[in-house]
Image 1 (tube, rainbow, N blue to C red):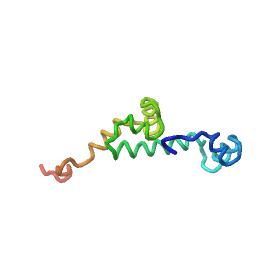
Image 2 (cartoon, rainbow, N blue to C red):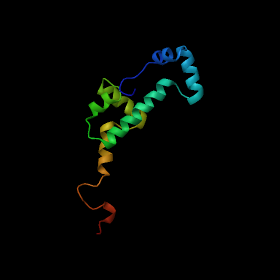
Image 3 (cartoon, helix red, strand yellow):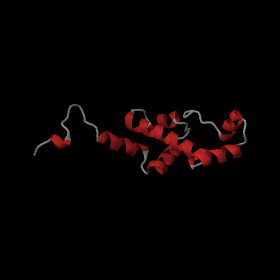
Length: 108
């Protein structure tokens, strides 16, 4: 449910326990809160889309469950210490462009 996030209350209701119990059990098993874990999953998916797709950043934000591009960029920066646009530029700068020789193979 990366595109349409579930709340802890939704999860708790589906499995028949309290939200507090979900929090406790989740933290016991993962060492982190459900919110932080889920945000990390969304950011990992976002990073894949930023680096390996041509989707506009605003579309990536929506694809990982953000209504606001600015909020998405804020969380991306918190997670990876780089803005999504900068991450894409860096990834693209490392790609071979239209049969160009690799930098290491160019002789001076």
